[in-house]
Image 1 (cartoon, rainbow, N blue to C red):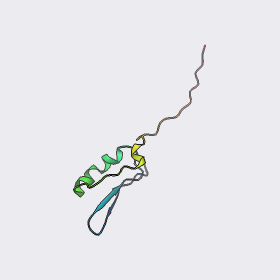
Image 2 (cartoon, rainbow, N blue to C red):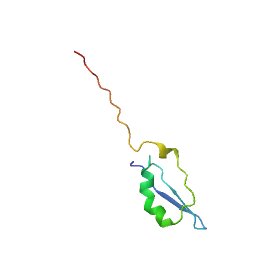
Image 3 (cartoon, rainbow, N blue to C red):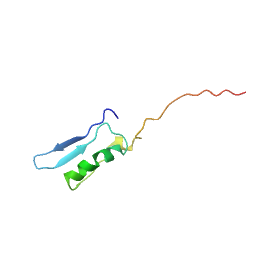
Image 4 (tube, helix red, strand yellow):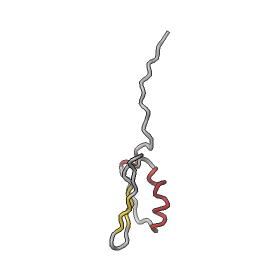
Length: 68
């Protein structure tokens, strides 16, 4: 998650959008919890496909098993 960012866009009317490119899984929710709370009432929430990805990278390793 070295390339994870939190981006907060605020328009001229004071509406804000928080995006979290680079986060996977529910890590984005935890990382932005206090920011979202400070911004006030949440009007909507849209989860990207990254939200449904595992937060970790699965370990892929081939193992050879010898039989006697």
